[in-house]
Amino acid sequence: MPTRRQQLGKWGEDIAARRLVELGYDIVARNWRCAAGELDIIARHRGELVFVEVKTRWGGPPEESIGPAKQIKLVELARKYLQLKGVEEQPWRIDAVLVELDGDGHLVRLEVIESAVGE
Image 1: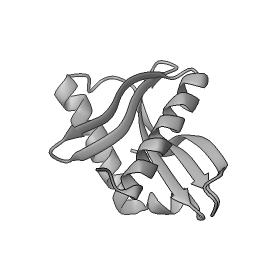
Image 2: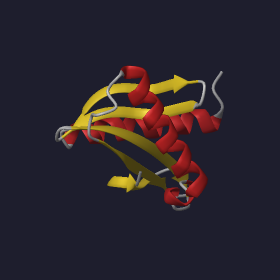
Image 3: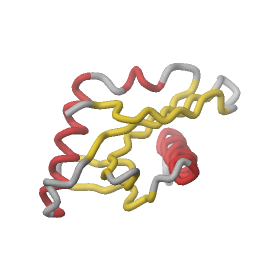
Image 4: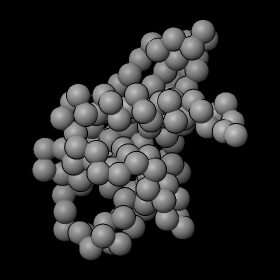
């Protein structure tokens, strides 16, 4: 049985995926895993492959959890994906979707940040 945190993460990823589709992203994969970790969403958008980190938080800014170590990890995972798929020359970026809920669980922010993490 999923924990409350896992349920929140899944809900956040679902709402993020819907929002990305509304914005013209084509979802390629969700929850892609390898030995090094997991990428929440992989999509195509305006000719680029996009690796999307989704952060969902109650009562606090979700972006606080995408610190320098997490950014390094995301770049590592993106490069691993490109290598394994044999598409290293494909233009790519890392976006973030920030999902913030108030103390009662109501959505107060759903923000897509393009190129949130640099190479």
